[in-house]
Image 1 (cartoon, rainbow, N blue to C red):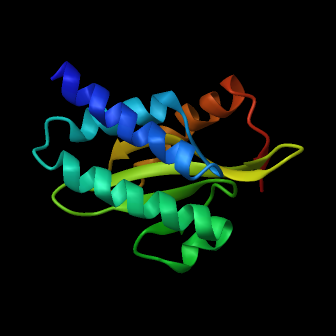
Image 2: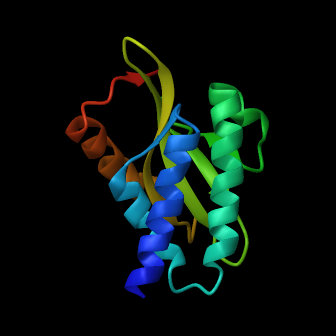
Length: 139
């Protein structure tokens, strides 16, 4: 299992290298791996993540035009969600940020959505990670 997790980590972090305007926090990577590792569908969800990160990299804020994959969270101006539906209902909360050189997306937290309003449980985690990494969030 440890070798499998290392492979997932390499694949996920390679996305940040390939699509440099999409950053994936280590904690978000771990969240995602925890969800998919024992699902029997890990390769499917890695593929879904790859497709969505590529699209996000190309479109940035306009990613929400692809409504099946992305949404802006109501009542949380700065937060967006990446959706991966299938046998698992995976969500990744992210924000847009910038520094003096670039504009980019930051994937903050992955979770398994199991009902309405579950985002509320994860927004405090995301806010903590924004503060921890000193991310300058674009609203």
